[in-house]
Image (cartoon, rainbow, N blue to C red; front, side):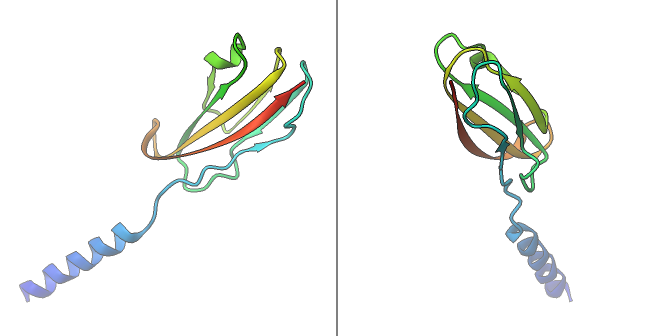
Length: 111
């Protein structure tokens, strides 16, 4: 009887361990080629299995976006310096930016 109980617990652990909980990051950008001063909306509502997330941008030297980060599901931003910006989304499967992380990037060319 004890062996059956151990086997059952092992089987349950195996089933739970095989269930993938890796976050699947996805972001949508409404305008990937804006001009300076045009608002751009970025959202991550298409992501799956994501509980917390953070956005960062890397842009031209001196761009204020290089020091910014966002954790909203959606935000609108207006660029003030032309150039190429890389938007980075880190998606986590736990609260407070913990757990497994998956990353996706997109490029915005500001004219």
